[in-house]
Amino acid sequence: MIEEFVVRMLLSVFYFVTGSIKLFSIGGFVRVLQHYRVFPQTLCEVIAYLLPPLEIVVGILLFTQSYYLTVLTIIILLQLFLVYFTFEALREKGHVKNSGIFGATFDVKLSWKIVVLNVLLLVGAGYLMKLAIV
Image 1 (cartoon, rainbow, N blue to C red):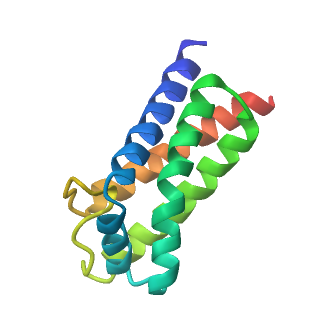
Image 2 (cartoon, rainbow, N blue to C red):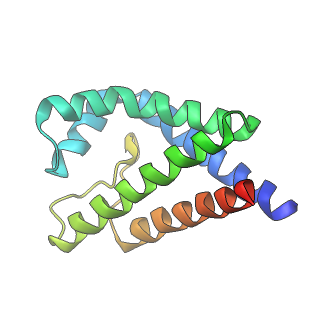
């Protein structure tokens, strides 16, 4: 089915690219995470070192359809997490300037567009999950 292929390719490329970009600026990504004021300093560092490689691996595995249901579950959980934290950061009137979607490499302003993007990624992963378990 062409729709499934397109959604899978978009998600896999998105995760691979964003993870790769964050990997080249771990220190900047730590600072972006700290601005969200959700995690303690040490946990921000751990997340900054673990998330980019996870995103890259998820992108590759989704592309190859390896461990498909597990990868889709990870994406859904990540997107739920991101929807919640970006929504909360915006609700608190913008103490976060950079959304962190590309780490600190590109300054992508946190806005409702980022929340919508995260929801769309969540819907895409949910769509693939539905197709996979039917």
